Image 1 (cartoon, rainbow, N blue to C red):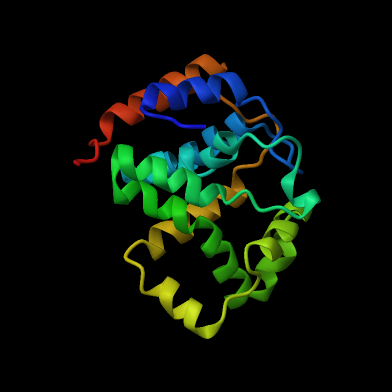
Image 2: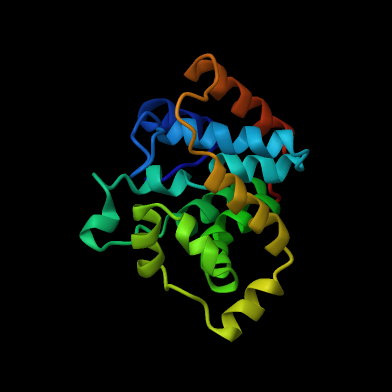
Length: 189
């Protein structure tokens, strides 16, 4: 799906955000909102809050039915989302989104206990996304200017799967996201 502006992101979430977040007790919009709230509560910058809200937008953009990992497919949602977000808001929003899958691989490699906390779908996607990192990949991730932001986003991504925690309505959640979108400077060509 080709998205050209922020209003189309809001439309996509409005139309498809109720889709179940694979293997989790929340929908896509609930997960996005929860991650955004966790970033807000932590005092994250507006670009990192927006990245937290939209880190999984690529899943909805791809629009694959069901759970791709059950078919052995990686939808590469992080790359899909990052391309869009870079065009609209620049690197500070796009890079944590692009790297959030790498952050999972990083954490599994650096902390074996992290592996035990992953859901079944996250374990399947981990293998499709490259599994544990090599030493060179660890160093490359650590050298990114956005490694710290991405690791924080990853924490919120893992925490943002709480059944029953959501805005009073989807309309209010989207209104909050729209306000955040307006507060983040647009990318310059």
